[in-house]
Length: 413
Ligand code: NIG
Ligand code: FE
Image 1 (cartoon, rainbow, N blue to C red):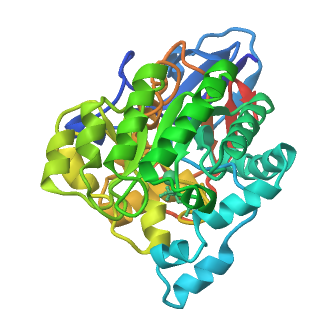
Image 2 (image 1 turned 135 degrees about the horizontal axis):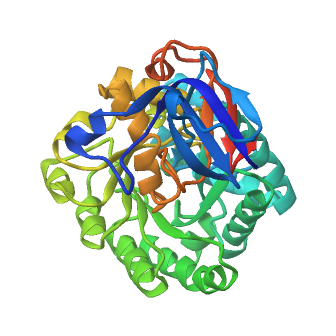
């Protein structure tokens, strides 16, 4: 599709061509052009700049006067494909039960796995598509989606195939991740497996099929004291080395067991959660290229600490923001709200939050060359706001949708 957006009040996320990610002081600047135009040709950004330079060519025109335009959000951590919901567990937590206690009693991830076991691929796609449509209306253009509610080879592959179908039918970009170790299912315990042997079993059984069918681009595991420990992580690291699928690891949500140091040593693309950090874990991330993906809505919903965004930024770590959209710890995927939480609860500035939710999200999926900023040749994945005072306003006035239109791959949604 070809389109010329004119009279844009401000065009944001205009980073220098070739910028892969932003860290330290660079994160603090979300560059904008006031009173701008942007031209889309064949789904790509073909040119942009101040209105005074706007070419007079014969393209369909959209007048954006009073509106702002920026790159669509890149949500680099979600569990969008699941079956059913878990509001009864939310209620239990409100009455005093902890997330861990609910999980130990067969709720939590096991509860969702039961529901996934009963669902067909088609049902999974229908439910996930409903959520995805909403996310797109809220300005998200790219979503990483993990498996992890199958907990046996057939059901994990079922989720990954559902993710693939979802990707085929949408203009959003869906990036699949194989979450090989999310919770120990009862069948594995009954067979005498432990967290490490179960992880190895899942990797051995699933990866050959995943690679043959192209079902995943990343590997993940839930590295925690009460879930999967360092021996299990080692199997995931080995599988990453042999398959070539980079690592994105859930780690340091409740306890620090040394997972960040190991993941960084294995050159993980990202380490996600990080609500509980220690000086050693911080040191491992210092100045490196492993991205710290923070998930403020998980902290909000579970009432656990927020990731130390300020310390990480000062630590010269690349920080990205994502939703963790899932039925247990973050049943919501509104990236505008994520930016608000990052500011209000983690003391990120609005400009830092917008960068972390776009270009650094793209970097956390190795997609910076295509997504996350306004640059010639990048995918025309854009959000157009309603008439609001500024782009920073997205991080300020929370709870309502400030997006008028999302353009994905050049198509208006
Ligand atoms: O990222 N932490 C592990 N997994 C999900 C929650 C899973 C669930 O409760 O269903 C998360 O928060
Ligand atoms: Fe998660």
